[in-house]
Amino acid sequence: MQTLSVTVPAPVALDLLEGPLGAQLSHLLRSIPADTDLADADASVVADGSSAHQAWSLLENQHKVGWVIAGKLLARKRPRLLPVYDRVVRCALGRPLSFWTELRTALRENDGGLHRRLLDLRQSAGLPDKVSALRIADVAVWMAHPAPGHRCS
Image (cartoon, rainbow, N blue to C red; front, side, top):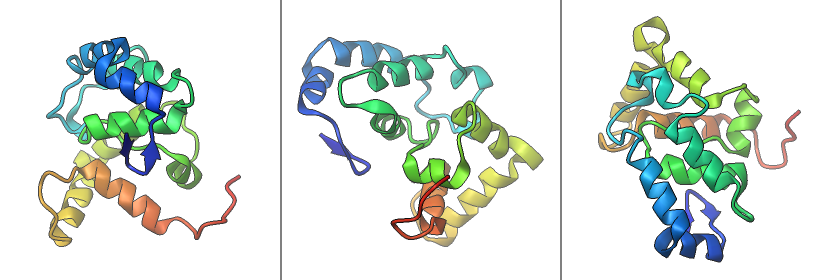
């Protein structure tokens, strides 16, 4: 199973598709809004202890999954609500205490100015509405990131 440039270890992928891990994750995903932008979500949706946080922890604790794969899987399942936070994003934006919460705050500041700017970029690029503002942000961070080999502090 491969998504967003990561490969899920085969035993975990099988467990997600046919085992108890998949059942646990599905149960948590039912509690995580699928049609809500992070900018519009209540803070509790992405706070520590939320279903989203529990789903991330569940995945992150699987053998050879870790924080990057867990985050990218959830970003794929809830692209409007849960952003990608990988090594490039961490290098560019640092290590906030809660990336989801701090990004939500940034998207809402100035009457949602950043969120609107991301949607404007999507429109300017001629991308369909199904491409989320968070995906536009992820691409912008990756495009602005220094060339491969750049060392983060």
